[in-house]
Length: 450
Image (cartoon, rainbow, N blue to C red; front, side, top):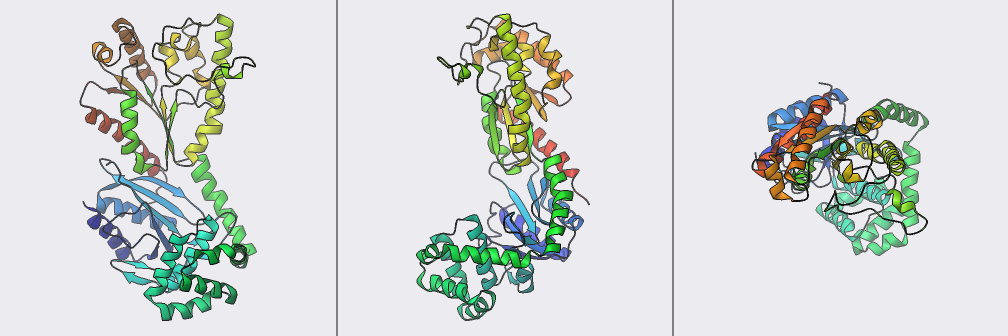
């Protein structure tokens, strides 16, 4: 399904359902092109109504709902992806009743958009005067009002100058109206820059006027009930880990899924082995500190540490896994990111020597209870001679030994998947991507109320 047909089906579903909505921002090239996100003001619809709409859109467009997040007061963000994820595809629908950033509560209500909306192609957009006001307020808050943004406002004004001029006089205070009109007539961003404080104070006054005491109470109640549980208690990000002997194909696959999974997450973070909340222990030496090694081309060449030092390093890095998860990884999950680990704690089960540990082999399993488990673990496997042909860092005998333990680990971890990498690389990438997206779909389905 091409972009034109897909977005046409999206808006047809909204129209057929009778949703009172208005698209704001980045709509000029739709439905021929899909923007990074589609901002939609709506009213007279419940959360369940929106969930039903999104479910129907996914069905009509043959898509999967991969994320649902609460954003702001009665704001919901949905991300959809193709059944077989495509590189570069992303459909994000942002529904909001009002624009209410933390420092500017209730600064803009969508009713003015919806009261005066007009049809554009197959969907509805604001009147130019309403969009000018909203664009100005939004960009002042985001601190990115520049010449390009001003040019867009000028374009809106020119599209209906007489009517727009009269309406701007009604919706702006006199001083702000004069400055806005001066900016438009002269197409000069310097006028804004010289009056930033005046514009900022205007936006603050709009927020103070709209954010009544009772509205603040309602918003607080909503945030506690929805935002806290939806985003913090049950975050929509995922953590995944790839483990295998050297030559298993981790780097190739991680690079590929960064593209195939991009449209299902709000960012992708690649991390090597552990969260790195703490630096390498050697970095804390007062004399001749040692930084983190960027690679380990000969993993068994360095002599292991003594027993006491090994114990100290082992528990120090376990603390990094634990604290690093809560202070670095969990916030990324709250931000709806995909966190990818190249290697993880389970490497200890197989190869303590790589990490210069002189420890009993049972110790990592004994203390695994204190290590946060990734949402998904991928164990990459291939015949020993195939892995050896890719990298000659380990002997075939050592590779075979590690394969045996890694495969045993798969059976012990309920969230682990054994991936055969002795097949065309595109097949491997598709298999891994499908597992990740299916996990997201199941995670999201628990939040859909339809």
